[in-house]
Image 1 (tube, helix red, strand yellow):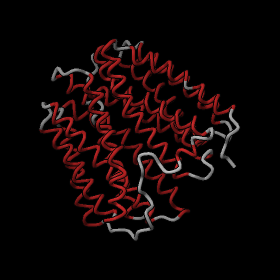
Image 2 (cartoon, helix red, strand yellow; image 1 turned 30 degrees about the vertical axis):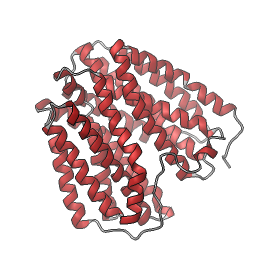
Image 3 (tube, rainbow, N blue to C red; image 1 turned 90 degrees about the horizontal axis):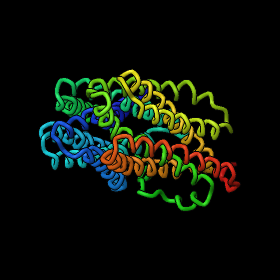
Length: 385
């Protein structure tokens, strides 16, 4: 494996670890400071918004000035966001600024890293390298909440201090060992709405994009409110929550590594329907939580359904794109970001009315979303060859 790929994998791992590390800590910060719970959703949303809207700008700069420079700038800014969060943890305004800074510079890292991979890979090796990046992102999501929960049990600032130090060390390593790749055109400039998206929406693949949005929307909403809900139910600690998320992360990995790869071509829609039923069941079980073990089982049931749905819909989308993999991937990324923008805000708003309301609503949405799969199956407007 190329040395550059290992560095890029480390970057992606730490970026998504940084995203996940806040999940078990943020609700406790909000509760301890006696701020309104809506700010849990707000702080998660501004991060996604900042990344969503600045990624095209960073893509332009990456093409113009080079991948390495943007990666190093992104690492500095991302590390700074954790420093701000840890130092000013009792200031709501500065916490928002910290999350905006983190989102902005995560956008720089996303565009520069994907551009770098395109520059150093061939058509034959690109899927493999992108697979390595996906694995790094998945590991970051698995270990982020776990590390955040364990370190947050010692001190709420500690997870962010540790993350800032690790990213700063990675900056030094990248400065010394990462080389600017030979540019291959303007491969990874990403528009907010990818070029050609309107044409894709004329075909049945549009139902898969909407389905992808719903899957991420439900997941982001659960991440924003799960600890708040379990504090009400069983007085869960950040450490306990981190361990639950780590265990459910391994369920996620098991589903993707052991189940999804055995799904036969043409049977994806059946699995997607089953996945949403499983997701809805997990959400209902969460409402019925009575102890820590029950909470863990419920979260794992939800995770199994959500992981199955996420992976299957991505696979089916590529098959339905008519070879326009880049456009389809860019649009899926945009839909996922919209889910992460809207989900936390809506779920925390519903939490204000009743702690269980968001889970009831999302369970209904999960079941209703199955209609999108039926619409997809009944349509003959396909790009599939």
